[in-house]
Length: 231
Length: 231
DNA sequence: CGTCCAATTGAACGTGTTCAACCAGGGTGG
DNA sequence: CCACCCTGGTTGAACACGTTCAATTGGACG
Image 1: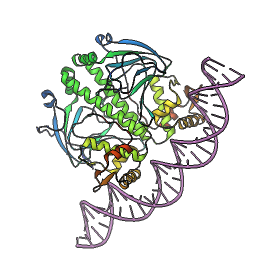
Image 2: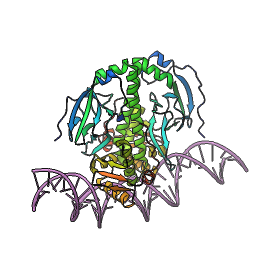
Image 3: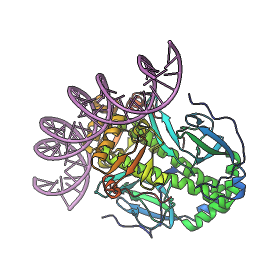
Image 4: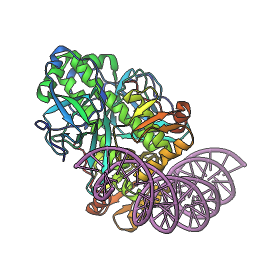
């Protein structure tokens, strides 16, 4: 059952990933950890002493409501900076969903100081925040825009295709339950929507967690004209 | 039909956050405009050369989808900073909904330079962005997490109460259609939810655009455990 | 006073939820 | 090795809720 990731297992590993190029002062600050599926990067209500960046793998950023239901606010992919908070504690939990992952941890106190003294870091952090806002707003439009379930799932698949980087085949690191909680529909409806898209010939399922997008144009059309974010 | 005010700005991701006290260098940058209901601060797809701050009044931050439907991303109230973006053009429109309003305009080029050279401005702008993210995430949880329409409307009323600052009586500067597009439910359902809350004795309607919250505790309970952002 | 649009109410319909059964795969223990 | 279970996923059927279409009211303004 989901072990908390260890206190800093710091090993110096080159982070020449898909993440944005950051100044040396920033990179030196990184403490690298390896983790596995189910590890919890931080928990709802933990104190927010660090910023994080996902280097390898995938994670979910979720919140559990009072009635026990869960909502997934976002999925995290390589390169993404997360863990910003306006208050002293985190309001959401972040949990690894890929079998393995690598994350970088940055002392919030020092990182903030750096962001104030170093113009380059300042700009990059602000840019990361603004992009996060853009993505959230875009997602809100997609989800709350009164599309049907099939449209939501189609939009989700396209988002995954664009973010996880695909050559037509999209790996889904998350379960159907995760997708359901992300789109705010029931698991059954997610499943039905997928089979609907499959029987229309727009996608093909390879196993459970792998999807081939057969007709991208048609899928995009189903999703509605969802203009996506330039990253 | 909605006159455009002032030269357009390029690139905007509206961060809908409350604005803290900023240093003199910042305040000197402000260009003040007065406007009226229906005025468009900027339009979807306009290029954005400015950041904005709403001083007096209320505005809506919306986007029109391909099929003609509209979605309201956020309502803007006095003090809020908006118009940030990472991409080249506005993805949303901002329109005044109160009879009169006052807004401040800041050259984005200069403001960004200021944010990079002045640690205080840097911190405050970053803080505004982070709070905007928090608010968006919170709103997402509230809206997507609660299934019932009555619960959404209840949550909306409480949000308005907290933001517009009320002594029990909440002024609603927006129409039922605006509320509907904000909550992604139909106007009829908004209306029905309001009457349901009224007949339960939780609220009272004074005219059309003014609501008295009779039983705050019960209304909060209906809204679900909606923890709100510290501003 | 009449017009126009926002707001409300009513009734039929459609879509997603819910409850339920079933299937497939992986792990464990006898 | 097979039986067993347990979780994740799919499918089916009844129901509930919000939408939609439609009619009515109410208030603002000319």
